[in-house]
Length: 373
Image 1 (cartoon, rainbow, N blue to C red):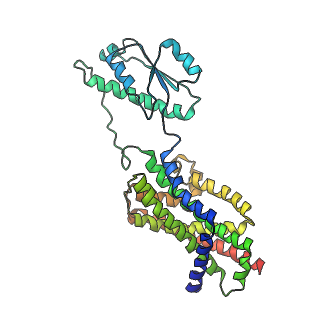
Image 2 (cartoon, rainbow, N blue to C red):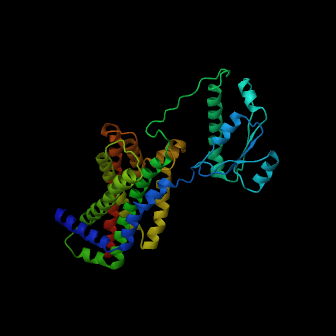
Image 3 (cartoon, rainbow, N blue to C red):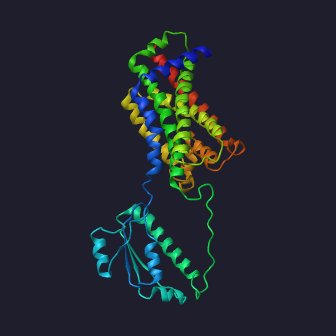
């Protein structure tokens, strides 16, 4: 293998990509607007949920509870009568209806256990699931704060002091922004390399390569380094300028170490893209293959939900996927500030998976070229 051939062929791939405005727009979109929107528009986040409150106590404590509900999690509470509550929920005006009973403050200060009724419109599944916990926490916090400040307060149980490490505010945008970059690195590396191979077949330039003094290994390496370099540069710029500067997400670990891990991961995913490009005969077929491959990779790698919540057989199978180890590596470095001494098993796993995928793709690529010769 001659490095000059690999270099020149890689430059040819970069020039072909530069003349493809659709691919350039895709790269720009997924690492800027897509990352920003995913981080700032998490669908499961409670946002402007309508709530109505029936205040039958009219006490300082009940007034304090009413004033605790405010945007952006909730709309300003609407004070209603008990007779209106069912009708408003039947009409779909309110997701939550809170009923504070009479003499609620007196029962609290007397050490009794009064009950507040919370009615939830469960047809609004995302708001109902998340908001019920919010309402319960807000009411409990306000009651405890009121009781502590009262001179004749009853004894309270021991409180739990919660300390959230790495993300003290439990800000979901911190998680979504970085996970979005991880998913886009996997997706684009597979798309670019596979599309580059199919584009050469459709344009007839593969035949030109067959009469040139280059080997399949040189052709593969040129596609791997050129497309990997494009994705790595775009991901690095997105991490620094969109995630860190634009969204204000703190990066606790070493960015160069993350880039090194991303480079090893790209070696595996670009090889996978070439393998898929040899299987597909056209761009539409390649698109269908991407749907079958990318969705399981992204959903089961731990980027969307923790791997521990999945069946053990799924966890075991997904250890053979490169982005599973890349997610572990990225979370360890960027979230928890882990060094190489902690994430070296993921580096080793990515290198081993990448070598296997590269060998399989090379064998398939050689057979594909042999049929064209």
